[in-house]
Image (cartoon, rainbow over the protein chains, first blue to last red):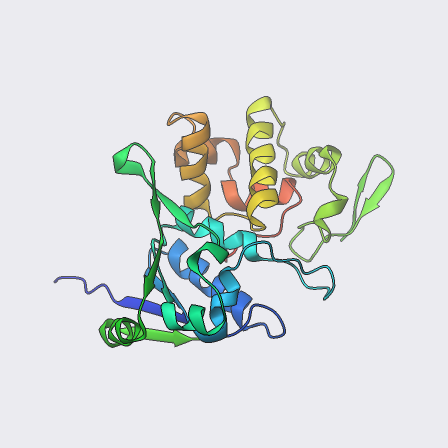
Length: 136
Length: 110
């Protein structure tokens, strides 16, 4: 009997703080990945702010969990998609985001980029291809 | 139940993890390990310190699989395997070593 591996896609559409959605999503992703779930992450709408560099939460009394995104590579999460239109509408570019990488154990630990910027149409296709979608 | 280290009291949660990671001092690990009848060696401390550095950088306690891989990369394949790590921490390298290191229980641990 062949085992069917489902493709999980986690959508992140909200700003990182103010609600608990972004952190909850990240925790679920880490738990799933720790159990060898095949996961992709997508960041769109205000969700693109989750990946921005130099977050400072001292004024709002919440933990700055943005360093945790850099651990995704360790959890073999290698497919992170960011929607180009969402970045542009917010005056952001890929350079405003953390440089997330994963290390290829079979390629002498070479660092490879995890983030792919995709168009809105490509994002729709990604959602179409996923077996299971979690929207946060 | 709070634990006593060098005359100071430290709050812990119901599973024995330190309530506040910033309270940690090496004595915490020594006291916790004594309760488990475990003598901490340099090899144990390497892993405890590694976990604290990992938390400092990523703000999470790594899952055991991630810990194993990361240790292997930093300290060599002879240490980055379950046999070696479970040999040091029989209750589970992530769970037990994280507790000694003052970290929260690893995300995804049950």
